[in-house]
Length: 220
Image (cartoon, rainbow, N blue to C red; front, side, top):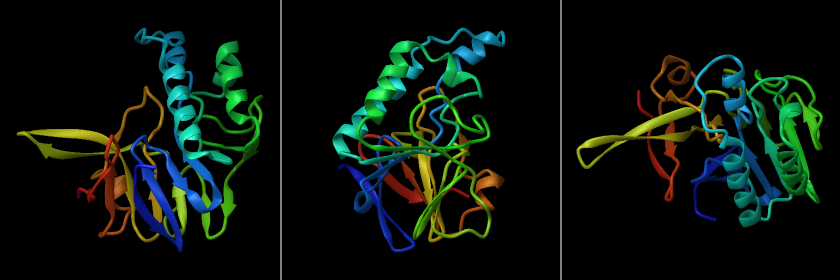
């Protein structure tokens, strides 16, 4: 698996270039903020008509990560669906695709602010997932440790060939890891924004996604 190793609370995790987090000891793949159904929700609310391909693209990348890792457990860290009704509006092909990925493995939907409460798909539905020494939840809580979360869609930039290249990124320090958004149609919050700079320790790293994950000091 191509990734950047991240230690947390005695566990060794791997930040993958796709934006997924891999915990080899538990055979656990963790993703956050899939936002399935976003293009449909925007169109229904009178917004821009985005090409309706984000669900298929997101599921294809997730399936690839599952197959490459051999994951036995998949944890979706909230905002898996763009609004409470998005799961019910999935077309039959997408529902069957999810069911195939769920078959034979533990699948956990952690609730987010976009998709609170249970959904009518397979798997377990939890407010948060304790898996000592780690705790998985959607939104980070100040003062927590051993915490893995999502929600903020962090992104950071590096200078390359005279321009700034911005990518989704993991944020990691000795207390927590914040995952990037995994979904195809998701924006991002700059790592130096107050919400993130106040959350992360001064020594935090930003691990940029891409073919070769790259770690830089978290921008401040």
